[in-house]
Image (tube, rainbow, N blue to C red; front, side, top):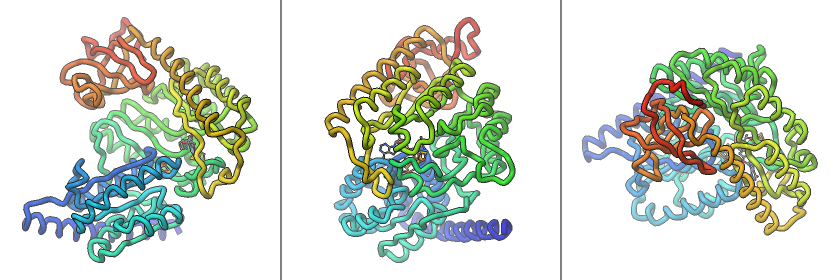
Length: 486
Ligand code: SAH
Ligand code: SF4
Ligand code: F3S
């Protein structure tokens, strides 16, 4: 059975590789004739899992001889990798593909493809089919591994092609990945989600949990280390349920320990963790493994037990706070971040006060806050609201105000201290400054000279805001042992 599966995967890879060679040859011939490369542009919405898929699409396209461009107008191929976690993500897509109608009219040979989570929903595919007839190719999250095949079809047939596999139980290893960053990498360790939080569309569009084999992940990280990558972020909708689908006992903590032993990698991050799967073993592993960064993203979503139950989150407010207490005790330097939903159906003012209570008690470094968005096909879709839209917005604003104050207060404690920063590059907001992150995940913008992406430097913090820190490069690149370093 297992051998059979490996054969099927190998066959898929081999047939994609044959197609890649054909398209590459055609592109080379075209380049000889016209002197121009075929250009592609990928727009990615949503979470890091979509980014990881876009890196595979980029990997395929580079192998086929396409070149990346930031200019959508000059592209021969545009791919929109979509998200449907909230309504505004969907509206953004419709706005952006609508805006391309005229460009497609003036450049009919341009190919526009739409893929990703939204395309796993039949009603979204129907909307595109009916209202956005200039879209050439539609495919889902389960079809990414056959992208070359789909592209070849559309290059040959010119009719709209729709290919959405409803569910997938296998994982195809060995796909090409093109990472823009050369110092930090996202590594998907598992796909799908089994939790079925009642508001969430993800389990329907990403399928059931499937963990990659530890050997495949470890090999990928070893190769990244050989390529001088310093930081890796292990990705999954619920990373701490990694391995539950294995027959042999091997869990997320085991994986972290194995990755911690890989030479060359300096920082290990992971997201997202589910509170119900935070174990003592995991907390101790974070404590014992020096490369695991002092940051935990632990969404609590809502504070009231009534709402948590309606959300099907599988923990109570008290259990969440108990776990946080344990984490803080074992890891006093840890930065905590979270996700919160405001205005879930049935949430009253009293329920919302319980959310604020958690925010005040835990003192998160940062919170990502969302107003509840109805998702077709989820159990919460038909649930009724207890408060008005206006009241939801008022609560949302209040939550942000309180959280911003807390974030600022925590960031103020960094003032005067020296922090280790992994440099990401030049700051987008101030071209005279560099930007990077501390181990605790804080953005630090700083002045300095010739700091290359991927360098680990020490920065003295001189400014603190709710969302970032500012500072100056410390005069030494060695460990400044006279000061506190996070
Ligand atoms: N798997 C992760 C994150 C999933 S999506 C987790 O379980 O934490 C990221 C965040 O989007 C969620 O944490 C949640 O806060 C928010 N979210 C998901 N569905 C939503 C919806 N229907 N409306 C508003 N926010 C939503
Ligand atoms: Fe969605 Fe819940 Fe799964 Fe996160 S754990 S992806 S919120 S269903
Ligand atoms: Fe969006 Fe899909 Fe991620 S719905 S949040 S891109 S898993």
